Length: 410
Image (tube, rainbow, N blue to C red):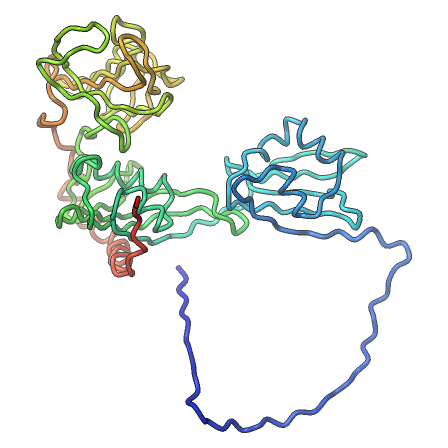
């Protein structure tokens, strides 16, 4: 972790400063020898991708004036990752005196280093795995309109704030419970490649103060290699079931004994909860379990049934498609993506129909009592408390940071 500080100095009015004596020294320095057969000079330049950039505009700013190079970059499949332009990403370009492209390198969205070089009268592309650096990052923020808006203001990646909401989703409904003035602090890993951020890693510690009530969680990997989040007293931070099968979505129809069905045009029971989301939004399983059915079924359309511990099961309907590895008998872990939002079956728009069942009888998932996940054993608790002490200090430091500028939709 690196810290920086800025100091400001000033002089009082009418202060007389002592003149420092100076003298001019001239010296003739010899120029370095220039070889007669010297190769053409290569210039390296780094450009940042801007919003609205195309490959042409990016390379033009870098001084590239090379028709064959542009043709290669447009047509060759090996250069295709270059077209996944992400604002802020750095691209390093080498050109010669005539503006011809000599080499180009940048980090792809998958974290590889892609190098494109002029060779053998044409171009070639090669990928390599660059050396990564993991840095611990501290951030804090205060909510003025929404969690994601506040996270953007604090410079927190979406993946980190999604993980934070996942960790606390058993205790906080991030659609209904979050309010203005709630604060959050997070300690997480960031991957850097060639000094450039290449994606967020694990959340190591987090705190969310919701309606004045603090919730804290710390990541700890057990001796068997299993990682999980626990409170500072060793209670599992996650419930056995997540509150929602999708991150930060909107409920359009709740559990009720009488609802006018938009397709069948009559009054019927609605034994689940409908979550509106764009087509293709990932759907996550709310608890560990085994897939007992994955296919088409009546009004559900594409539907997955999952059996969990004890008498619990869940249903996920109207999906556009299933995840590639989902089939009957597949084991899934809490938070795994099992499919994607669609509007198959009896649906008038893209959404997910979610059911929570106890003994095969649907109950309201918003009010049902769910089992708690297992806490740490008394034997492991001292080791856990000793291991998280640095994270406790880091979280306290993050909490003490000045609040970032409030994010507002106004």
